Image (cartoon, rainbow, N blue to C red):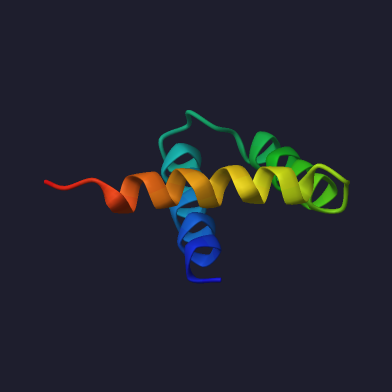
Length: 64
């Protein structure tokens, strides 16, 4: 749960930065959010979550 909240906050921060710098228009941001909501309701959602979890595990196991 903590990983998904962190990812959501990171994506939200990036979206706000892109909107403020005019790299991402508000309409594009809304489309991205809608895509995320619709994608979360599909059968691909568990596969995407597993991929994110695996990536987070790999990153957390790296030693500096």
